[in-house]
Amino acid sequence: MRACFPADEFARIGFYEPEEFLAFIESLPVPEAPRSTPAEGKPTRRGYTLKRTYSPLSPEERQQREEQALREIAEELRRPPTEPDTA
Image (tube, rainbow, N blue to C red; front, side, top):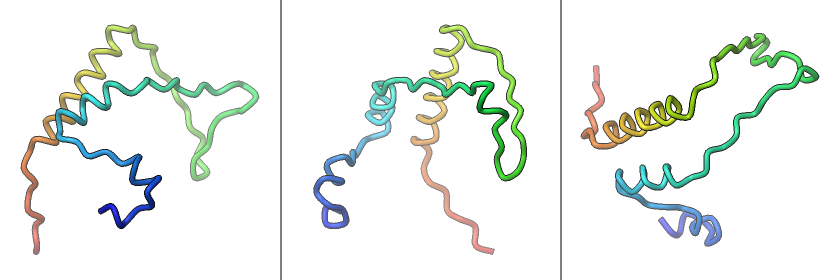
C-alpha cells in the first residue's frame, strides 16, 4: 500500500481496529456548525431552496446522541460482511 501513495500522503493515513477507530473519532475536536447569515439568503441545492428548522440541543442531549451514533458505528463495524446477492 505504501507504493500507492506519495510519502507525505501516506504519513497521513491511519490503520485502526474498530475500537481504536472509535477512540480516534472521539479524540477529534468537534467542528463548529456553519451558521447562515441573512445576507447569504436561503441556501439552494440543485435548484431547490432548503428550509431548515431545528431545536438546539442541550450539552447532555448532544452527548447522548453522539454516544448513540458511536455505538451504532461500532455495531456495524463488528458485524461480519454479508455476501452480495447475485440474481
